[in-house]
Image (tube, rainbow, N blue to C red):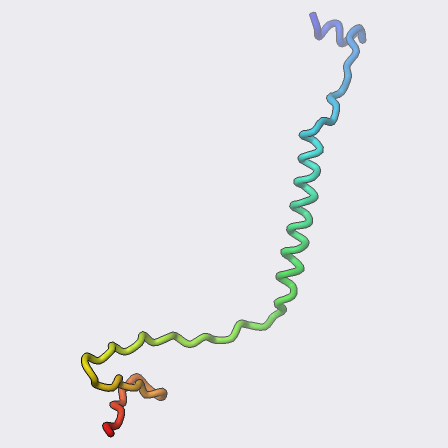
Length: 86
């Protein structure tokens, strides 16, 4: 019945109105576009340079027991140099 009445133009059709949910969708769209633009600006500030190489940290040598002086690691290699006794 309603389909036949719509065809003859007896029922007025009002399109749906924009409500608060449409406004929230628009605000979120603008926020996403702004976020993407700021992310691109941050990314483009890095340029084509590569980050500097970082060396691997060596674990600290074990602490000696008693009054013995701690061994000093050799800066050129992994060998431990015993400190001189005084």
